[in-house]
Length: 498
Image (tube, rainbow, N blue to C red; front, side, top):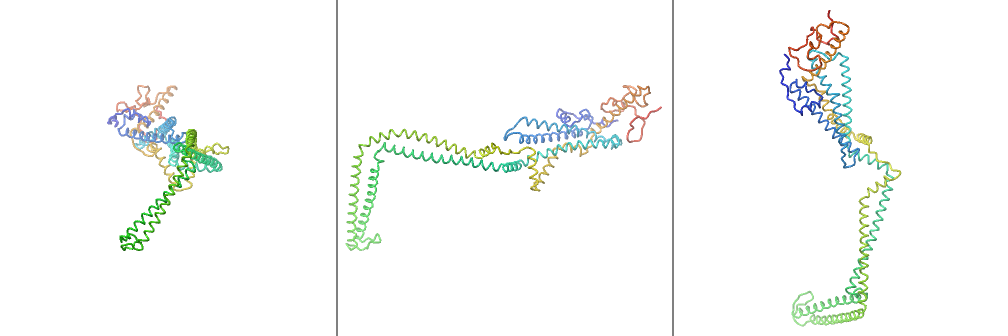
């Protein structure tokens, strides 16, 4: 009795079918296997999907940094990256994972006592092909690791490339900087001159408005008279304060009050009392003189006002006529000043862009080398300058290599005994044997020989494996068994019997 008949066929849904296709496995054969075989295939497919997503994201970031502008997302690059990642996974599935199912099955059958490799030559050939397939995956993984390193050290690489670019264009940068700074300086001087013109117009407009209120206020003689009166009034106030202070001192001296340091504190009309009365008389006389001078100055100011009153109306009319002109001029000058300030602010803000534009339009300009090879060269320079950074880059390469080859390594380096692998190897071997038997039988019929004993003479005598289809063999539908022979490599051609 076949042990496979004891196993219940696992239920396979649409998602499991998609995973089986992803892992290049055969659904019909998996239905004949224990459930853990299906789980093994699904786990392998899951690793492939994770690797594909990792590669697609990595290719997208690299392509966006190489071919897209800053902040731009290009759908064509995203789709191309996903297609490339899917194509690489299909290569791994067809060239590595699918053949490994058969190789693992051959190992299983060999453990069971039958070597179907086909001898040492076949082993060497299979090993060479496996090595080639692994080398292909290693090359893809290493390329992916380089991309990952470029992304991790993107800022350092950009700074190194920019420094090299500035070094090559240093003379042009000095010339462009002098030119741009000269324009900024000229604009700054223009703003200063324009601000002075605006201030002068504002002062003139203020004077015209004052003339409309009091035309005599701006007359020099009137201003001198007003200044003289102000000074005399201040002197009169000080003189009055001196009189009051002298009177207080005399009163305290008469009463014998020692309020200040000069009081004697003796009651009566003593020497200090008499001196204080003389001081009062002197200060009152001085205050009176200043008062007379204030009255005289005010009289002169009144006469001056009367004399200038005839010219006031003419001055007011002239101020009214000139004021709109000066106000319009002030508006125009303010507009010009505002434009100059905006221009200066724009020049200061765009200084670096202006210098860069001047450098790029120079006939001696050396373009920025920001290509893929230049980035790899910069990364190599970073690793060469610091051994610690070189070690970090190596660790990134190893990690990225492991992520990219996760599915391949899980299939090639780990040997998980599965019934599925054994069935795949068995079916492949039996198909080849049946085809060879059919060729021999057809050749024998063509030359008139009797079919070999133990071989079916027609399709009705063939077993279920003679047509190359896979399926279980029960005890009632086994093909005729050839005579037993020692275990080892099967004969290439069956022995003819008389």
